[in-house]
Length: 224
Image (cartoon, rainbow, N blue to C red; front, side, top):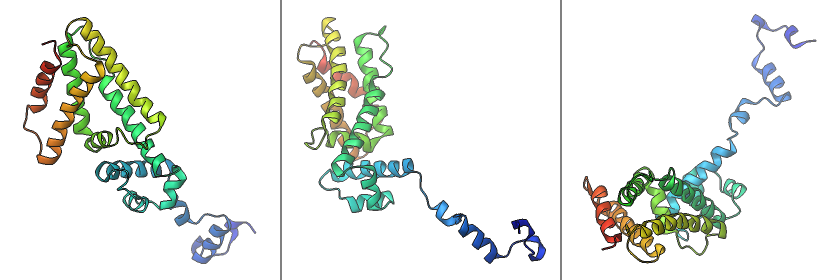
């Protein structure tokens, strides 16, 4: 007998009849709805890890708390990442590359002087921080972690080299002071991170500080 020939009242299957057919064909709606897209699960884990690693550090973050914050089972974390070290490297690599792109792409307008190019890069730093405060804190906290992989460090090294090329060009034009490019990068970035920490710990900085600080840092980097 075909399914449409079942003699049921009103032309509708009874609940028990429907359930038997659903079970036979594996069509239990609750089990289907309970399946989460692996990409969504991974993003939930990465987002929770960013928050916790930023504010608790690597050693202060444990997998059970991270799983709870991500609303996933602890087993889900190990299905996506080898271990906690693998997870922190995945988060670091993702956000360091995003940071690099946000600061350097597109390149500043080369028709501008080096001062104006620098001020554009400085403004991009602040835009990134305002949009991604946890990521900015995370990248600073974990920049020198001994758990960072060679691949993670290579992203930082490439970023620094790109900035160094720009600095050497500025030094050739006598727009920037003498000194190793890495030292000038540390001076500028250190000033920025100091302001970020002040913003985080003492309330949002007054309007205009971000722009004004760029001019002050430029004077610090200048030829004197």
